[in-house]
Length: 131
Image 1: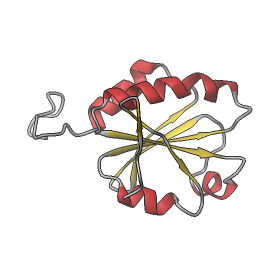
Image 2: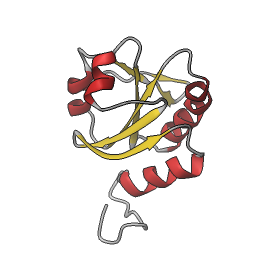
Image 3: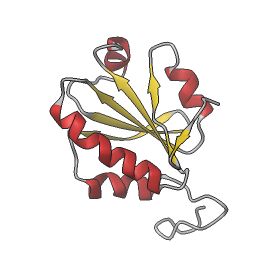
């Protein structure tokens, strides 16, 4: 599993490269949000705190990973990233959702609620019969 360090009780974001991307996805259970971004991108900087907040509030059900498209153009091409920010949601190594642009927090929260399993066997009230 990829090391996840915690600072002030908040899981640290994992920064992905073309070398560690596949390994990182396989090593993480649950929902993984992958934020494709660039340093110069204003909307990317605007959405970053929202993604971090959703991850922190998820009680370990969501892992946030980031891909700098300027440093990793091969990953951007592999996933057809044509504009940033783009957030891909992975579960069990497969893409289960995609958000283009700096979406409102409510949109991202809805995806997290629908796609992330609850821990400790608690039932997800939005998905009958599912943990």
